[in-house]
Structures are given as structure tokens and as C-alpha cells.
Length: 261
Image (cartoon, rainbow, N blue to C red; front, side, top):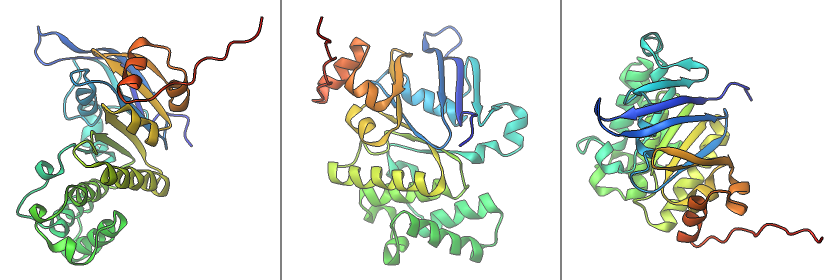
């Protein structure tokens, strides 16, 4: 595993408008390569905005964002760095073209990413869809006839078309019921191991973060208030806001051990 973080944010700040309030206030975070790191916070904390900065959908007001040691800048954009970082969004139905079947959508993504002919692109699209658990007649159906979990699998397959090394998943399971959530989380964990991906998983649900991630950061009001190994934070949170999140989702931290005097 490389010592260079897959994602690194250095004092990143963001405002929607030039004189508006700061949404992100000096965020510094390093995501180790080949791991799953969680970013948790309530609605309005700035977590989705941060995800969009990481994939270069928005530009920071100040600070630097590095992907595998390379800054987002004009040169890195020209040299294809955007393909190495892909996003999985919360609403898979909105992310898909309603007129394209899963096979057509993923074939189109492969053809653009690999500059391949349609036949070869279609073959690889079939492989990608099988990799996320979709095959047979399902891949020819309209998105409207698929379940939410199936649509999210299509979105993941399409993201993999670019052969990314980094995935940013923004509330990727929050619109799904609990049983389907678990299937998608297990799929992401399996893909991370199989492909050596780095995943930044963004969620308001700290129990999902606990299930999925190696490390986590807690975001409140545009500031990271706590970060570290997930099991350590879950069992011994240091910040009051983290404890509030844990209580909201019914998790009771292990109380600190008191040594006898």
C-alpha cells in the first residue's frame, strides 16, 4: 500500500458565493490508499459539498485537494485525473438516463472512457454489470422497472467503467431499505477488496459508517471535530457531537476503563 494518501485535503475552504458564509472551514484530511474512510455529519454539515470538491465537481475557495499526490489543477484535468475519481450519488434514478437500459448506459460509459468500439465496449459493460450482480434480462430493462438497489448497482458499474482508483459515495444507500442497504454496502466492500479501491463514504448514519469503514471523520458545521480509526471512535468518542450522533442511532460507546487507585 502506498504511503501517499489517495485523497488529501489541505486547509480546504468553500463558499457558495464570494461574500457568503463558509460552508467548509479549513478542512484537512488524509484518506489512506486502499481503505474505506467514512465522513459522517448531519444535514447541512458540508459533507456532500466536500465530496463534490474531491471529485472536482466544484472548486475550493481556498486550500488544496490532492488525488494520489497530484493537485487538482489545469494540467491534471487535461491529463485525465478526473477519470481516476468517480462518484456514486444518493439518488440512482436521477443519476441514470431513463431512456437507456443498464447495458446501454454502461456501454456508453465504457466507450467514452476506453475509446473502444461498441462491440468491445458492450462486452466489457456486460462484465461490469455481472461484477455488481446484474445479468440476464435485467440489463436490458428500463431504469424505471428496476428496484432502487438494482439501479444503484448500475450506477456503481457505470462509475467503474473509467477504471477509477478512488470512489466517492455520497449517501449511496440512504434511499434504500435496510436489507438492500446491507447488500450494497457488502458489494462496495467486496469491490474495494477485489479492485484495491479507495472509497470515501459519506453518510448521516453513523451505524452505516461503523459497518463499512476503516477510518472516519466527523463533520459539524463545516469543521472536522474528530477523526481516526472507526472502531476507536465508535467505542471511545472524544467529542460531544460524536457522542450525540451515536446516541441518535442507538449506539452506546464502551465506557472508559477506570484503573483502580
